Image 1 (cartoon, rainbow, N blue to C red):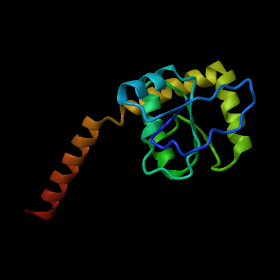
Image 2: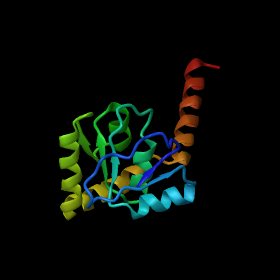
Image 3: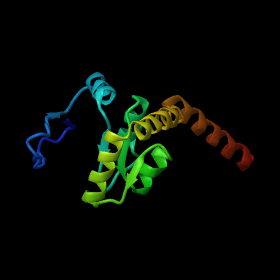
Length: 141
């Protein structure tokens, strides 16, 4: 399932045995349901500001295969299967490994769920407030 705001992307050419469906923009509840029901999240991004889709999938217990770019690696830590950006063959092999190796998928699920728990909005707000207080204290004001 391809989900996202842009309907301008053509569906990829896939073998007849692979079903691909584009659903366009979805609401938060439907997105959470898609993540929870997915066998994995394929995230072949070449540029990503933070990696929120990766963390959303991990929070839902979904294994992640992603491009090895700094922002996604920072978000995912050791909880994703990383692939060199733009290497379609390696990405395909990583997808195959996660889909066929139940222990690999289970490990990614466990590490992903734990990783996502360390990245909550509440925790981010607490850490930001702590940083601001520390900066004020260190400035002497």
